[in-house]
Image (cartoon, rainbow, N blue to C red; front, side, top):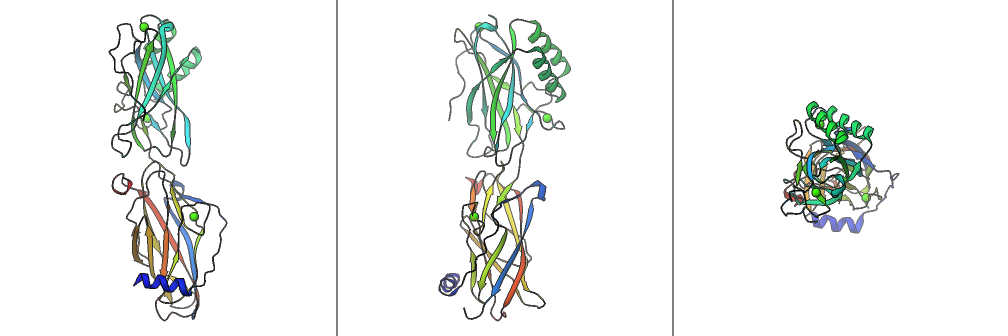
Length: 358
Ligand SMILES: [Ca+2]
Ligand SMILES: [Ca+2]
Ligand SMILES: [Ca+2]
């Protein structure tokens, strides 16, 4: 029956498309994870990388004494929490590494760090990210301020602070290194392991150190990439144009965020997004007449819904994905000619990593 209606629309509808401003918006924490749009219609009758080395550490190989990830952006929670930048990346995440070599610091050829993705999210599943090389920090004031920050965040205890401060500053065979890596929103929220190791001039590879295992109060992970739930949209209103009773009128979406007349949604956070929608009836002002039948189509799923009822859209909007959102209204037979208006609402929730995002 719906197919027949589509054919009829193609043959008879007269579209009046309103092109809104083109400014996209966001559904996120600042909006309480929901958003409202105006709706209206006019009834017209008649018309991989590899892991670290696996060789045995040599007896004189460099040794990682301690390491932590900084900055810690949630001091109320143990371990290191790194926030995501919706729709962007950050390059200021650091692994601080305390390393020594029995042959002295001059024997250290390279210090490397590697991030391991969380094990419970597809398709990353404990896969390693690229390796980065660390550089030595020689300034005593910088070393001290880094230790101050780690202690303040609870990443090292007072006793560890004293030990590291003494050894790095007073002992010639110890040093602090730092490795920087970037995190962008398309990488999944969760717990990341960070591996660190050193290589000396004799190509002896030190034992691989898993950052976080010794951190004060941490759960043994390198850092937590904190969940951020953000959806970007481009449509500013839903204008169905001129419609006819008994004819389903569609607003077709597309995958282009620059075309607000074709609704588009994009996941700009680091977790899957689950979407709920609701439409009020489109009402002709001053009358009891209203349009109260709707449909949506999203990632191949089509469903009908009634006015004033929240509807869970089945498929999940996966991390980094842009999808089109098709919407339609259906005016029942007998509705009089006139201008009808209503509201459309959307809410977002944390979605599932499995299912549709596989
Ligand atoms: Ca050595
Ligand atoms: Ca913390
Ligand atoms: Ca669009």
